[in-house]
Amino acid sequence: MADTLQVLDRNFDVQLHEESLDERAARHTRAYRCRCGNPLFFANTQCLRCGTQLGYLPDEGRIAAIDQDPATGAWHAEGRSEPLKFCADRHSGAACNWMVFASNPSTLCVACRLNRTIPDLSDPDNRLYWAAIEQAKRRLISQLLSMGLPVRSKITEDPERGVMFDFLRSPKGGPQVMTGHASGLITINVEEADDAKREAIRHAMREPYRALLGHFRHEIGHYYWDRLIWDSKWLEPFRALFGDERSSYADALKRNYEQGPPADWAQRYISSYATMHPWEDWAETWAHYMHVIDSLGTALGYGVNLARNEGRVASFDRSALYAPQDASADRFLELLNSWLRLTLLLNELARSMGQPDFYPFVMSAPVVAKLQFVQLVVADARAQSAL
Image (cartoon, rainbow, N blue to C red; front, side, top):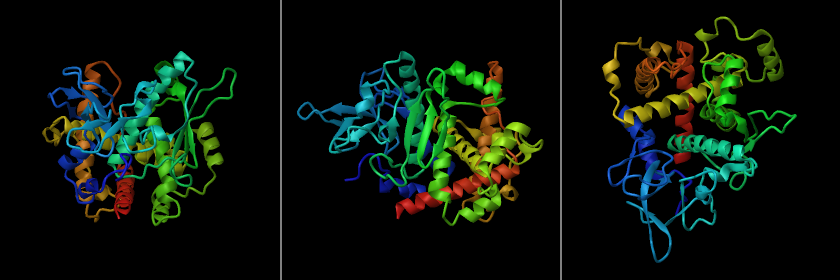
């Protein structure tokens, strides 16, 4: 029997045909309910109305009510026969609510298995940072699974092509821990989980958006470039669209900090940082694709009617696409234009509360083409995983 860490074959039946927005919402929804009818949220471990214990089933992408067998001590989720157990990090500072098959010799869930290094938890600040980091990481991993992408631990499952995380904190006096990716290892400076410090960096760097989940999505984009683009049929198309990644990264970094982005960057890139190098353009575009899929799936899962805002924003058509004749082109445009209508609403709601824009970005036609390219790569990876 496949472990809970793997996306089951039945999920691919939905993923491989041309999805409607409603089908996409069902696969990416964050709208959950307890069996008593009470709304549930992604991090919940217990229903606040009926007291039922809850667990996240990563292969199904849902929060489930679970009951313990008094004879065996195993847990069972409604609609499933396999006995389950809690991830060992459920009662740690990570507060993980993910489930593992009871027969699995591992005590950790698919998300927690990816950790190579965690911060020193004897420090109270580190415990707070780690809780926030794990919450963002689980949201990342759950989305990757729903997208049908390979998620394997570099530590225990796939040393060559897997992924792992180091969560580090800079010692007093340095050196500074840098968030980044290298050969499947993603390093996160845990102080990014400190809202005040992260906001100060955002202002210092003149960034319109800086979030812990955004860091995860950006860095995992670098990982999937190595996994899905390098030495594949997508490499030359990538270079034609994003640029040649063989250009010196060190020179690009120096040029970026000395000269800044080109004046017309917003006409071609999703962010100013994306202008630095083709790798960063890919990672920023990948992160925004994940933003769109997760946020739109959540909105539709909660019943938001985006069609009512149709006509309030200028919609993109096939002329903006990378592959306008692709069979999924119209579905992609439906998704993207729905996103534009959603962010129009959310930005206005934020302004009504005196808050910064929810989505402080403007999409141009070249960005739309890059986003479709990302979707085509993801769809191809999903199809290959289903074979």
